[in-house]
Image (cartoon, rainbow, N blue to C red; front, side, top):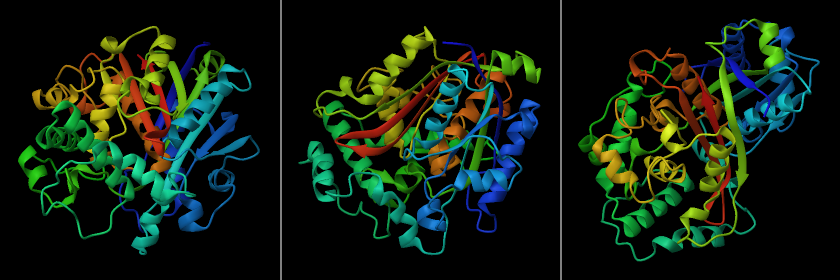
Amino acid sequence: MPDIYVVGVGMTKFGRHMDRTLESLVGEAVDASLKDAGCEKSAIQSAFYTGVTQGSLQGQTLIPGQILLAKNGIEGIPVFNIENACASGSSGFYLAVQMLKAGSCDIALAVGAEKMNIADKAKMFSVFDGGWDVSNPEDNLKKLLAPSEGFEVPDGHESDRPYSLFMKVYAAFCRQHMQNYGTTQRQIAAICAKNHQHSEHNVLAQYRKPYTVDEVLAAPPITYPLTLPMCAPISDGAAAVVVCNAEGLKRLGVERKRAIKVLASVVRSATSRSADKPELHCEHLAGKQAYELAGIGPKDIDVAEVHDATAMGEVMHVENLGLVNFGEAGPAAERGDFTIGGRIPVNPSGGLESKGHPIGATGLGQIYELVMQLRGEAGARQVEGAKHAIQENSGGLLGIEEAAVAINIFAK
């Protein structure tokens, strides 16, 4: 495909921003990305805005992108509003890349933001209820829980506090993996502890307290085998990415050593399959497609950011991406393979579990981290010698897998 580059990235701190407006969060991220790119607002020719919860929580059911960008001095250009569940941010990035490939513009902006923390907790959690087919939720849940039926859950491992229905589904994925491959709760906790230890060095992360494996296991339960630190929090925040083609790069005058090349950008949706066919998972297929486009394979990847809405998410994603074989993520995590300094560092940002998960901004926040890594600008969490990076961002549920998945591969 034509040469496409990320030339600017910016993000806010993820967390609880009760005193901030969406307008200010978007402005902070956009301004940071433009400054990073050495780009004026007037140079942006197209914009893709990703926000999932504004309609439910703020009542802005239509045109949030046009409104928020106009308030921040970007108007008159094509603005597209993208909703693709938790994969929204990366889907916006994918569409920006496609517009550049088509030659419809030379410089584009992808920006995502959420303000999810509100006083009404029930309403706050209800935003996740639409992440599957709402016409038949009972059948959805039955289908998702079926592969882990018969698993004996220890007493005292269910929270009496409200939590997202998706945590129940992730717990079912955990139990299925434990049954099929012998994965242990301690191995899943090792992933969680690793991510919280990584986040200690990320000033933009929502949580920066390091955990040991034993502390993760001793934490309050959500639903077995998940404990509280294993699950991504409710987050506010914004992230933005400036992307361009070769003509845009020339116009901006960005140094090539700071311009990160997009080797592949793939979006795929769920397909019908049986639970005993992980090799047909939409994400595994999307990963194979991305590697083919990039002209590299899993062994060439130096660093990864994956969608760990729970620690189990990381187990699934590293296997689907071929970074380890199916069933091997648990032992690899326990060995430290995914830790900075390990064989293939995963989620050096701290991942969603500790960095935070403002849905529409999440994928763009992952891209922010990988760009910093490939530039060698990640500070204490730097993966030495990183030349190739992969990002996986997924969301929603359809059948027995994620409804939408986006995968991007980048090169220094």
